[in-house]
Image (cartoon, rainbow, N blue to C red):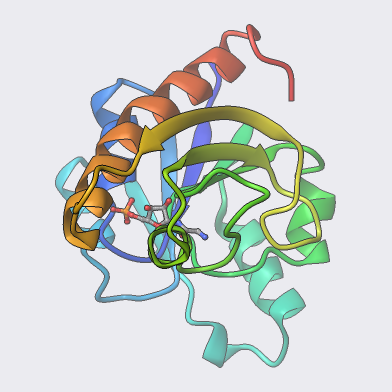
Length: 184
Ligand code: GAR
């Protein structure tokens, strides 16, 4: 049986979409103890590991602590994990970490992809799932879905529509990877 671990920092709506799709989530790793995703995982009796990076002298030390807690996983899914993955985790899970990004990479990388695309005035933005490498939102693209920005649309409305697309694309992509229909 394949297992995945989900790393998330905030709301956890994409974690919920993965869980609702019946994907085998062994653990949720979160870097904020009070993030809503923690309670959402606990409500589903999924193990959680809270990592406070401030408790560790280096990112490598924090990632070593994560690895010590993490059950053996076939795939790590970053679903709103607002940190750059360092060499320690990348070496432990080579090519096995994927990230969800709320824009059509390579456009609008970083933490505010939806707002950046909106502010730029593009007519089409979207959602990307990609393999994580040492760069920022720079790894090989696995899946994308476009979202057309409507005339006069508010940022909040666009954000809601982007999230709805994420909730479809991410579980679909993870399921395809686990079924070996999509190669990492
Ligand atoms: C999602 O929109 C995800 O694409 C984004 O964080 C949100 C998390 O929402 N990730 C990034 O911006 C990464 N650069 P959620 O906590 O409700 O799943």
